[in-house]
Image 1 (cartoon, rainbow, N blue to C red):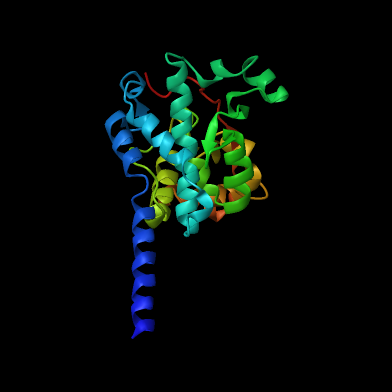
Image 2: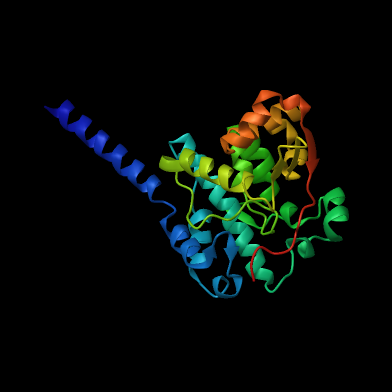
Length: 256
């Protein structure tokens, strides 16, 4: 009898933990739903809402190592990256581009590692870290999920659109697929000329090419999984005959 009671208690605790993880980003969802419309952010109103700092504090108090589900851990890091990006824009608002926050601008800042992405203003589990560390030392190498590139948002127009809800482990696959379709079918960010066999794709596929495939053909086959059949079939038939052009990146703010 005692063993049965102990087992029931363990199961109950596990279910409670899983439920808590599933609802851990509810506050962020309410914030995003209020200020994000089709990827466009109402920064003027968002930056006045104290709930963003409340959510940031929630992240700072969280030890991600205690999150049991791998998908929930990935969702945590994605939400952290996006929330702290919103925070740094709000801390400096009004701003025309996130590039205005780099020491020396984008090129010099990148070379000297003085960009805003290199600044240790992110706090997780009461320890400071950087946006670059989250993306390049945590998300990319540890989860090896190429679709993550379609959900990390750098507050710029050419970035994937910021979703109007937080990412949650229990529905993460569905959210990642949906974001991939939205981003890859947005003609302002990726477009495909079936007649000339030219794919005009985001610079994301140049910067992080190895995350998607070993060459242009394999990258196009990855992209084709999220395109309508009319374009996807043309790519799948002979991806090697397609040329790839990486589009200019618009760093202007993804909102106002």
